[in-house]
Image 1 (tube, rainbow, N blue to C red):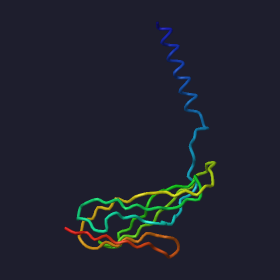
Image 2 (cartoon, one colour; image 1 turned 45 degrees about the horizontal axis):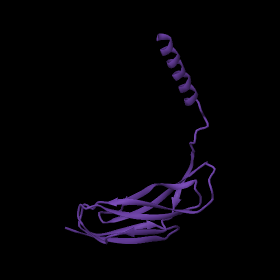
Image 3 (tube, rainbow, N blue to C red; image 1 turned 180 degrees about the horizontal axis):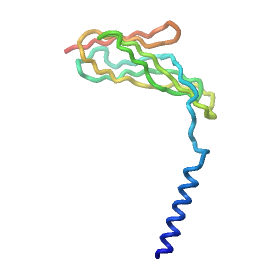
Image 4 (cartoon, rainbow, N blue to C red; image 1 turned 90 degrees about the vertical axis):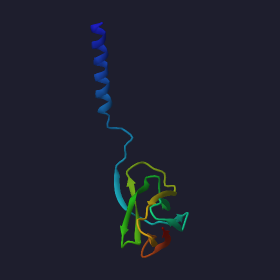
Length: 136
């Protein structure tokens, strides 16, 4: 019985060594991060209550399957104005060059009443402007 446990333990250790030393895993390295224009914005309700949460969806096109959404730069210009810039990543993978559209979202949870203005970067000096009225 002791010999059987030793053989099983040895096989487990050898398996772990070969598994952990495999450099050919399906990992891809992020090569770059860059701005990606927001092509469109969907806001379901242009009026909402204070402290409620609403998802604001943004849509961007990516040039290949090696590109995707990385994150937002969400800047509070003042209590009621926000500027939003989206960023994409690019990997070193072997990907198709098919254009695809990515959908992402911001969960908006207002802390003040008033008319909020959102400016979403749409390339160059262009912005998509949306407003949401927040009531008590």
